[in-house]
Image (tube, rainbow, N blue to C red):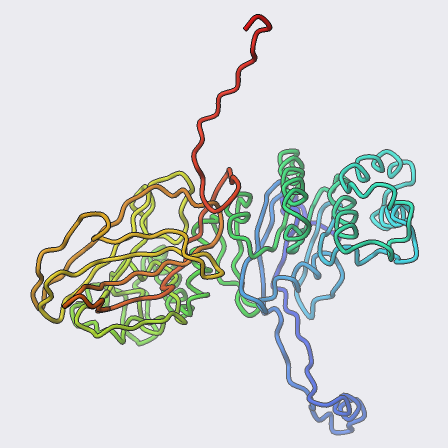
Length: 467
């Protein structure tokens, strides 16, 4: 594909790309439409992509994120030439190696080595060039003598290893990865990441799609956020991943209003919000009238000035209690005091709860619990365990409780629950509990075995023979 002179620094340029699919309710409708003299429509249009534009500079690592159905795989297929856009243009400058559907170009009756040579030829390499690369590919795949067997005899793990080894060892100028790094065992994944880091440092352009936000934040120079085929935003990984969390929490309208306000601020204007009020009018809104039922992803959170506005709040959480206390706001704060769902392993962080009391209570207890995605409780504490007993509170009192600690959990995704409870006449009473109210994404450069890090101090010395 051609590149204009101005775009020489771009490896990939996507300009106003739209992909429309015609959907028919019944197969016969397709025939009816093709023979219709009056050109009657029997289909409805589905926009997989709608006017999408972004650039990937040479040597840059760019991530594309978004919910299922946002068009991520569609744009990758258009960039690699598997699909043709309905309108718009894609320019690519460089030799592409794509990890889309691993092994899609493999012939099941050919041996592993035959498939390596065949795919190498399809990528434009000569037999001599593939001869030089063969040993690296086989060493990486680690499938032994199976390379001499037809690939139809392979286990799915062996198939994936060979396909990945081929794609990542042909020194591509542009590497395109679609969820491929979630395959194989943990050791193979680790090797793939190390190899990706190597080719990244060599200046290879990488475009990746993954649901692993840790990888996105660790590797990507820039992230593009899509939703239902539309471009939402692009920018630094941490900031865009936080935006993605808001979409997951059902706050797309709030995010759009936020982005519009940002854009307007840049242009020196006052943003017009969906309800017709300007951001200047709503910025100082008094939040004292918040009721428990307002604790949802559906309200116009972007302008209430609460910490939870900046978090991905789970719209599908379980919430209950007798209402005598109300957790009306919550925050996750990193070591720098920023409210964020993204925390770094090894750093201090704070869980903050703001509680309003609607009755006199003798001895309230504040709690938090962190669980993994399977629901296993990993850690948690409360003010009673910590010896921070709360004095009797009155109706109308407001309290802020902070739990500050070091993040020792491994990199990954977790869920946070919190509550205000107490004991009355020996009975445990729940005033307000929020189950799985928000997520915590832990970013780590060093994961050990298990769910948390023992923070071992390691010492290794050579012993002298006379000791």
